[in-house]
Length: 251
Ligand code: 13P
Image 1: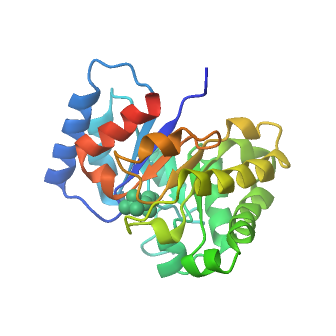
Image 2: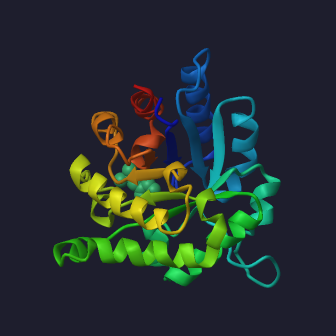
């Protein structure tokens, strides 16, 4: 039997108390009475962690945060520490999402430090890597993702088998332009090989694909040998779409 896939929704900066309640109620209803066929998570904005924690309690939906500080605590206004995320039951945290690398200047070293803080707090970091369109067109895709992952491997040593990696080509995020299953698999195979050089447990590190994944294209992406799940943006905000992607992960 193939290993269980992970479907994680990234809500980004969307939601409200009312909208979150409706979305999570619809997901709960859609999952009720079924055996979870894959691992499921939702990455919610930090202020809603407490609300979401209560609403996913007793369901197969795991709670994720969208970012974590590279510091433990102290004078870092606006930052949220791994210990704080753990207080609210976060099981996963995204680190190094391209929107944070691009708009908040996060370097490979910062991303690696964030992954380290998450692991130390017992939270699974979902490490995002991916090339821009210019980098792809310049033939630099593999160099870019290898460099991004190398920083995390170097900083995390023997814990590296405890991470999740998400390959998100920047040109596919929110654009409706998905990587083909072959393009995604090609990169995933490179990431798997890189992990295998660092740990004997590389086969069990989930490698997610993200970038315009939706109900229509999920199945063929998830059928690829090294695609172990999805990191879903826009489609995770629509309960029926997200449920269909979850269903595709089990088929
Ligand atoms: P979209 O699914 O909206 O393209 O977003 C992907 C993403 O960035 C998930 O982290």
